[in-house]
Length: 320
Figure 1 (cartoon, one colour):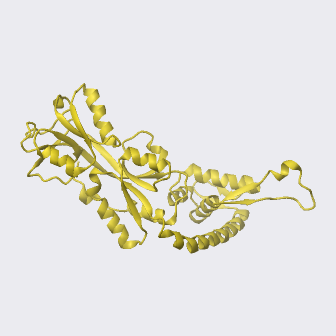
Figure 2: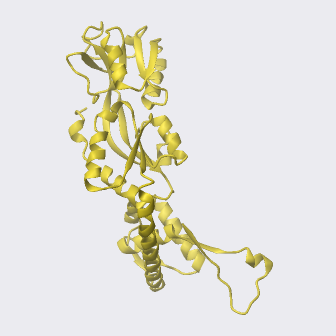
Figure 3: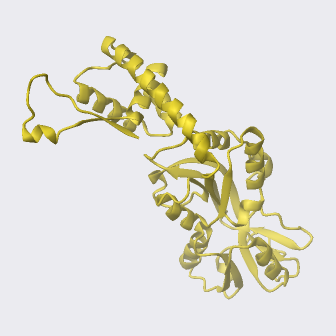
């Protein structure tokens, strides 16, 4: 939301170019400034709003430039508020309180129509994401819509703001383009049936898979790209005969005994039917939640992100 203030001297007519000139102040700038005043810290203000420290500094600098006033004193280990800044802070707090009241009054009307839109990765969504959502609903009545997308597609939808946040495999380039929180690291393993010729291997390399029938995750998966890259680097010509995002389908094919699939160690596969062979050298994937930078974050989304960042997943993930 943006408010515009037009300043002019009394008794003076506008020149044509003055009519086009406005002074713009945003609620985000006020939120950032007030947070710095409360904490006397740009770092803590940035953490509260999930933005970078430069974003906070730029917002306050723009306010000072707009009103031709010094709002903060930057000392060695502490930030203090000037006398003008104290007055500005009181006015800003009052204005923000009114905006929050207005938001609260109308958000109740739209909240039932606009649930949080969250993407989850297909293969490991069965491991712990239902538990996260169930635990969140125990403390919040915010509706959540889950979309099962691979990490590549999820990022594209996040960019277009079709999603609010996405749980993804974080091993991709330009991760810094997003706000993110890493949640866990999991081993990549090669699943085969107990009757597969490679079932007795303690570890397996890409070279060992020459000519083997392999199932990979769909092409919108980061893991797919990781494995394809490793196979090319090893010069291995594997027989990739299916791309699949459904765990049930994948394991049913693997159970047949003549193919294998790259999955994660947390995948719930019955050890009586399957063997999870570690890769050599060991390969892992990082998982976490990402959301778009420099965009409006509703209070409901902020609450969800805060909950996720404090949710303990360690009990669901074996030690590496």
